[in-house]
Image (tube, rainbow, N blue to C red; front, side):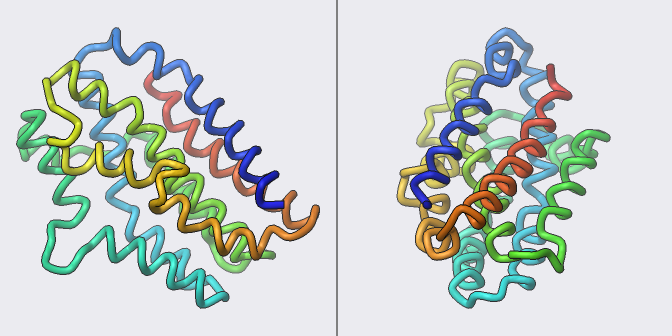
Length: 223
């Protein structure tokens, strides 16, 4: 059953990469590109709180520990956090002012996206673990990596930033992408144990589709 879900997930990934923004992005200005990065950052700023809220409702201990492990990567002990690294890329590599990077306000669409992402992990829900873990995998890992699949090359062409010189965008692309043995794939084991029949497969697909739609709608504001 998990293989069926994985194939459905691949369809969503392909559809995501067909969003008009990605074809238009190379033709848009650096100012436009930076605005995109800053609005993405508004969502990224809520990542830890979002995952924490999801974790509190999870029933299976392995599911809780999976989320904890991702959060430990996000806020590593004695190392810069992922948000530190994001600001490094924006300020030190791209050249955005610290004032701009830290004072940006989420647009109405971005605010709506954040609200809907938190609604995905509200408690209670039927089949909470399955619905929420699928939502986190799709909206928090898979589609984040697919976004940076387009961002990383643009950093090189626009600002001559080699991928491996990026501390945030490139590592997230490489680590979160499906089949990269990173965060996305860390969900495989528990989802295999939860997607066991046609009923749970249908729930997983519906949850993935809902998370996908929320993420996709965020990019409509840039087209």
